[in-house]
Figure (cartoon, one colour):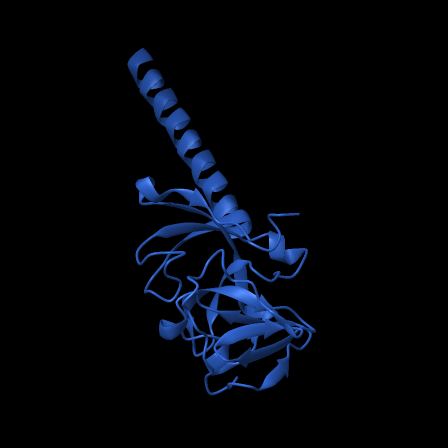
Length: 189
């Protein structure tokens, strides 16, 4: 009988530990941070295909995404998919593409920390070369870092804030490429 009590006690302790671990995991996964896999080359060279990133889910509940943040969001044309892009314009910003460069509020956007100097940005069906657009309240304007191979706001327009899942902050897989994801416009502050 003593053996059965020990087995029962061990089983009960093990189940409690498993349930506690599962509960903690669910709280973190649902409310705090979530892993995402990069699929495709639209953010190359910042992210490579099949890298895994952690995305902060809570920060955008208290503030909006800022220029330079890398965000994960529901794809505009297929909400079953998630996209990852960089915020180029916040509400109220004027965006223009001119001579292969991005201008925000009339100033050339310095993208040297995440784009090679020979990369040019050309328009799409929503934002064409020379046009100026103003980002409306409750939206942002996003682009992939691999401009030639990115479906982004230049094609499908402004991204509603409600579709943003979170801000990516850490690459954790593969292990040899572990690194934090920094916003080039706020890290100097």
